[in-house]
Image (cartoon, rainbow, N blue to C red; front, top):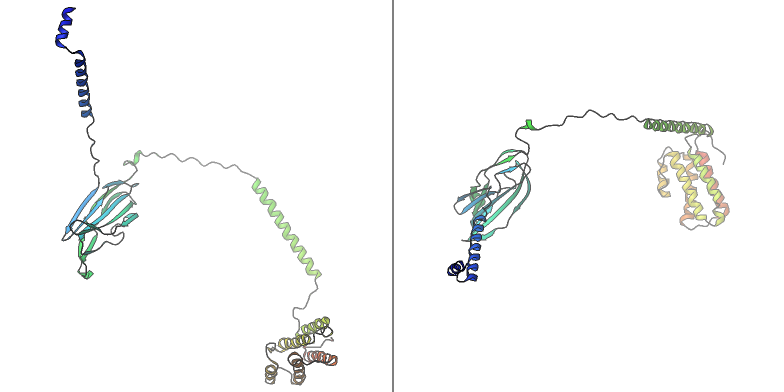
Length: 347
């Protein structure tokens, strides 16, 4: 035992230092192994298309984020043109050469100054394919010309042609697609409630219609048959009866009485002879009668006296006596009786 202890003391004269050294060696070995296992991740592979074309002071690039998509995905396409600052640029028309895609969104940026007195203009599209297959995006023309020059002196540069593959979501071998068998038609249980309700409603409607027809026929029998044509003098007599019932002279409404009775005679003349009289003045009306052969000449004098007497009361503030009022009423009645159609009726 003494010999072993002596040997160990010779080899490790400092026990604490030896343990520390051993732990440090273990840590270094573990760190080295971790570095081997944690290698830096690889950069994500770029699957897009990036092509550039240059001509003179202009350079145009076309970028597509993917050259292969499924029909459910969208495609991001951007056009960038870099040109000298003293040049103007005309980008392609909206959607030019992109008719085979649906344009979901687009954006045209404002010119941005870059290094070496250059400016950059960009236009981006978000595209959506309609069908699967190979798509070719044809070159698009971009015009550029110096400021102050005419547009017909512009130079042209075209974007490069690119091809994009659109894959279908269906399996390549359609034979592997299994379709469920069509189920046989399901029998709908019959319900007689609909027919019963429909029949009941139809019976009620027929009964109501029949009742209305019977009622209308009975009413037609009870209502006496009236002559559809009412003669002008009959209308005038009815208006005179209502005027007498109002008893306007007794109420002191003499001017209103004369307005009503002159209106009755004018409406009668219009209905009887077809002469439009209510809106004419007395002078205009009487002058028109002189040339109208349909109006009986033997009644012109009576009508002249009647209308002028009414005008005196209505417009000249003439105050007629009771005898004058009665004479006016009798003149109106006599004129109607003398010019009525057929046999005159007693008032």
